[in-house]
Amino acid sequence: MSPQEQAEQRRGQRLLFVTLLFGVLLNFPLLAVFNHNGRVGGIPVLYLYVLLTWVALVLLTTRLVQKSS
Image 1 (cartoon, rainbow, N blue to C red):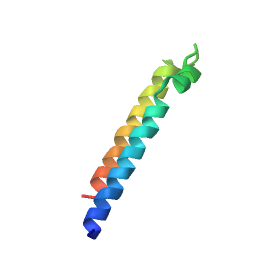
Image 2 (cartoon, rainbow, N blue to C red):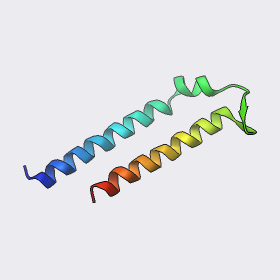
Image 3 (tube, rainbow, N blue to C red):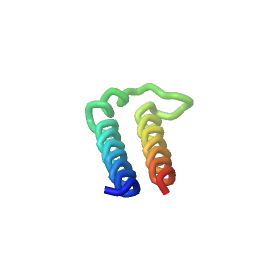
């Protein structure tokens, strides 16, 4: 296997790991932890958690894809 193919395989494995990680982070047990009446800066905690988790997913995925290009 060439070094480029190995790099592509590692990138695919990292992207799969990111997918599984965020699947866990956005699943019921963790969402239930943040589902309460608290607010941060006027924003419900659950909404803030989902938004920040989504932003982290987008940034991490972008970094992984652009780094190997």
